[in-house]
Amino acid sequence: MNIKKILGIILILIVIALIGFYFYNNESGSYKNELFNSEINPLNAVYEVEGGIFSIKGGVAEEKVNSMSRDAVEVKIFGQPVFGDLNQDGNEEAAVIISYKNDRGEAFYVAAAVREKNDQETKGTNALVLGEGAMPKNILIKEGKILVSYEVKTKDSSLVEIEGRFRLEGTELKPSN
Image 1 (cartoon, rainbow, N blue to C red):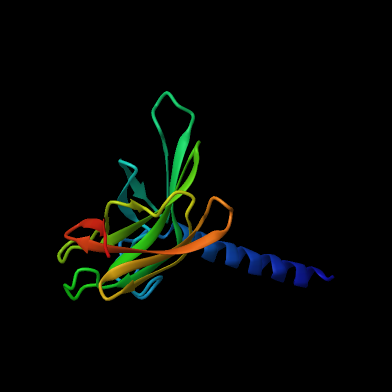
Image 2: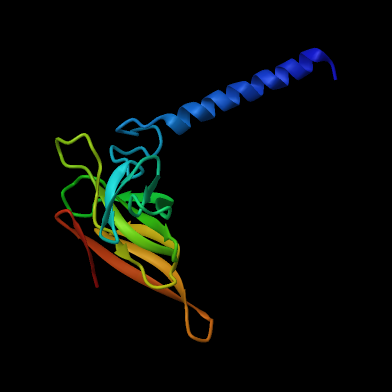
């Protein structure tokens, strides 16, 4: 291979790396017309999970359980957020599935992200557990409710699909029928 081709390939790789670095480190408050085509940014919000408050940045938060412990809890957005009007106010909210990992294993939760009318920050809600051993399959917003389909193993190790329904009341997420 001649030197010009090698230098060209290296230059292309550097440009790709710089573009990736820019998007990875871009933590602007609004991703309108950039990432989700929405004013809400559920990847940068504060959520309440398992009684703890987690500030998720770029889709991930990792925090030590306490200052004396080496164990950490990892909280991250699982899959892609979905968008729709959850409280019939004419504004778009987001629904997310959150993965919560600690030294005992991993559990999945559903939460919502909202943005108050004159507020620049996206705020997360409380997160509700999907169920023991749940494996999320799909999340959507339909008729003002969050619908989450997930699978759980039965005692005989077969998989059963369940659909969880959730509604937003004010800034609190609650189970729905």
